[in-house]
Image (tube, rainbow, N blue to C red; front, side, top):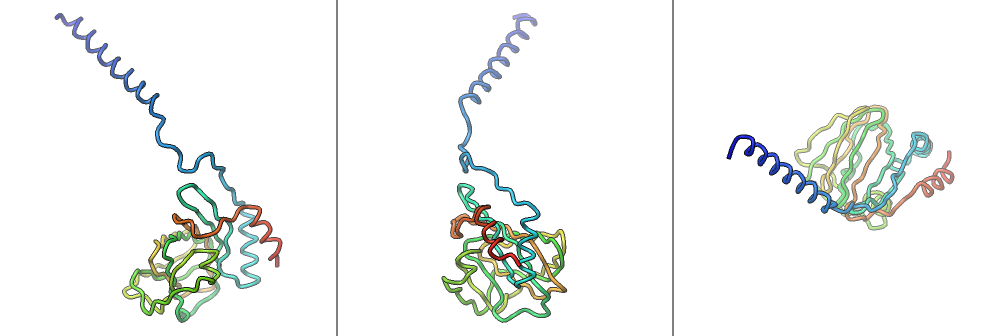
Length: 205
C-alpha cells in the first residue's frame, strides 16, 4: 500500500467516524428538561422595595415574594429585614428539616452563627407561620455547640443547608437580605406574581 493510499484510507476512516458521531448525536436528544415548558418568573426591584416598606412599617421580618415549581423542586424568594439586635433572643436558633436557605445581603450588617449541633432543641408547631408558609417543618433551639461565625454585610452571601441551625447574635442597625429557599420536597405552598400583588395591596403601609 503506497503513501497516497494510506492517507486516503485514514481520511475515509476519520470521515466515517465523524459522520457516525453526528448520527448518534442526532438520534440522542439528551435528557428531558426537569421543568417541561416552564415560564421564567420575573421579580422587579420595585416589588422587592414594596416588601421592604411593609417590613419597615410593620416589623414583619420574613415575607415570601414567590414560591415557584421548577419541576423536581420548588424555589422560594423572600425579602427579610431584621432590626437592631444587641444579643440573641431566647430559643432563637432556627433549623429547617427540608429547606435550604441562601442569603444575599442587600444592606446593613450583622453576625450570624451556624452549625448542626443544637442545644435544647424544640419542635416548631405545625401551625407556626414559618412552618406553614416560609420554610416548612423544623426546630428552634437555645444555642449551637461549636458554631461557625459569619460577619455579614452588603454583597455577602450565606448558604444554610437543611438541618443546619442558624441564628443572628448581633445586628448593628438593620440587615436586609434576599432569601432564596430550595425546597426539593415541595413543603411550602406556591405563590405567583398575582398572589404577591394581592398581598402588597392588602398590606400597603
